[in-house]
Image (tube, rainbow, N blue to C red; front, side, top):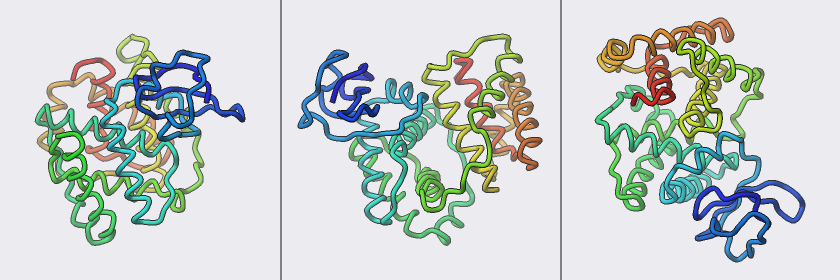
Amino acid sequence: MKVIKNINNNIAHCVDSKGREVVAFGKGIGFYKAGDDIPLDKINRTFYNIKDSDYGTLRYIPTVIVNTAIYIIDMVSDKLSVTFPSSKAISLADHLQFAIERKDKNIFLNLPIVQDIRQLYPEEMELAEKSLKIIEKMTGEKLPHMEAGTLALHFINDRIEERQKDKYNTEEIVEKCTEIIEDDFDLKIGRNSFNYSRFVTHLDYLIRRLSEDKLIESENNIIFSEIKNKYPDSCKCAEKICSYLKDKFNKDISDEEVLYLVIHINRLLSRI
């Protein structure tokens, strides 16, 4: 396995013996230099077909969070006898890091559909609750029990067998949404930044929810009002993005989805 570039101390972007690009995980492999061969016994895990935005995500998320996500995905895959896309652990790691940051900032979002999830998907919900204990054990972070619902949604929505064929040009939609932000705030967003990687990941999930008519609905009205009053410009920008998406998908966008967009826009502007 030959190194292309290091991502962090324990993760490297490599090319295998067949010339395929791969992200390799292993203790200390990030110290190998570009062009070096990493012994296979040093590599614990490999991921193929990684999106460009995932590299930025991996660079900034602590290794313990990535390892926790990998452990959880392996457990869920085994228990549910399903195959997740190789990038699933990376998107889950990003979700966990974001959840920890929300907790640290005392941002707690309601998810009233938790009971519906529990009734419709009892196995996924049970695994999500078990995952919260794993997260606390491996990272020392105790997440609110409500996060079990968001974890269960990850396990439900991303099964390969249940995925619908993407009928939309996701990259084109993401780029248009990015341009709306750039025009509104007269700035240029770095496409390789960590916050942009998260923004792209969020939009990817939002587009999927729109295409499958599974938008998030909750009772976070108080939080939405507070965020709207505190960040009126970001809220107006989020509403422009939602107007564009409404025209694209012919579906109304919930206040909950607007709230998440405002949060991500502010992250791009380094406001929260």
